[in-house]
Amino acid sequence: MKQGKRPNRRQKEELEARNLNPANWLVERDSTSEFVLIHRFSGTKRTIKKGA
Image (cartoon, rainbow, N blue to C red; front, side, top):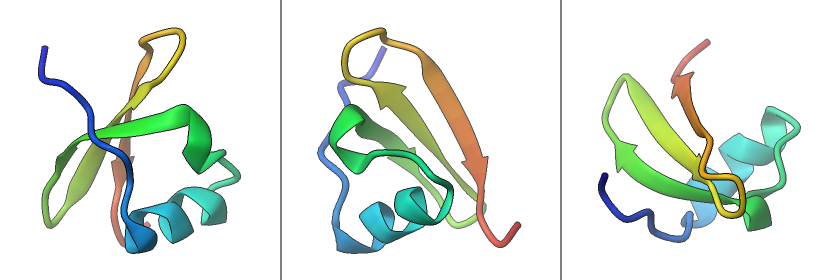
C-alpha cells in the first residue's frame, strides 16, 4: 500500500464539499478522473470520482 500525503488546498476544498474532514484523510492517488483517500486512523480507503 502506498503512503498517503496531506491534501493540498484544492483537495481540501473538494473533501469539504463532500462533507469529509480533510484533517482525517490522506491522499494516496490523485488522477484526472478520481482520487483515492486513506483514513488516518482506521486505514479505510475511499475512492471519489471527480466531476460528480
